[in-house]
Image (cartoon, rainbow, N blue to C red; front, top):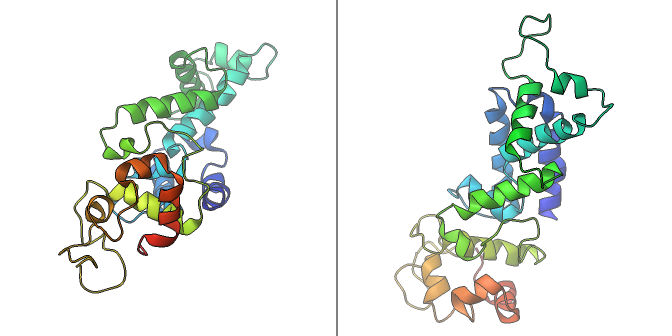
Length: 237
């Protein structure tokens, strides 16, 4: 639900006619608005890296989506009898009387076509391939839970409360930041089991009261017992 809302209300607006303006120097202002929506969708706390948020949301990074928006019409324009085919295959010279553009569409489309694999006919498939390749090179520990990118992330269909808890487990394990990852509303950072600090590491790996039934493995495969724990047993986050 939240993923659909983000795509409909934020990304659709932020990427409208992106093929025309996506090479502008001001696109970073659009990225700020898009990145601000991702923590709301995933339920993650700050500071969580933006590349992790896109993985948890199952939404490609904004820059990659814009590149695909340039590649897609460029591929279609290469077809015979297409209106833009002469322009794309025989671009006008630098002295031609046209509106000036620092980063025009034609060179960007030509570069995208030359760099993309011909086996990926659709720009969306090319973008998925690029996204997965970038994620494979990312050293973050989040890859323990999410080895591959995609729009059908394990656990995405859970209830909102369980989904938020799962994402905060995923982004918090291995990180010691008790000021941001405390659980509950108590002013003390002590855990109910007697531990001095109730960090995500402690809850996921050690806590006899709140630890998921199968620890990290359960959070990775999301078995039935772990799902039930996220819904009813784990503390409010």
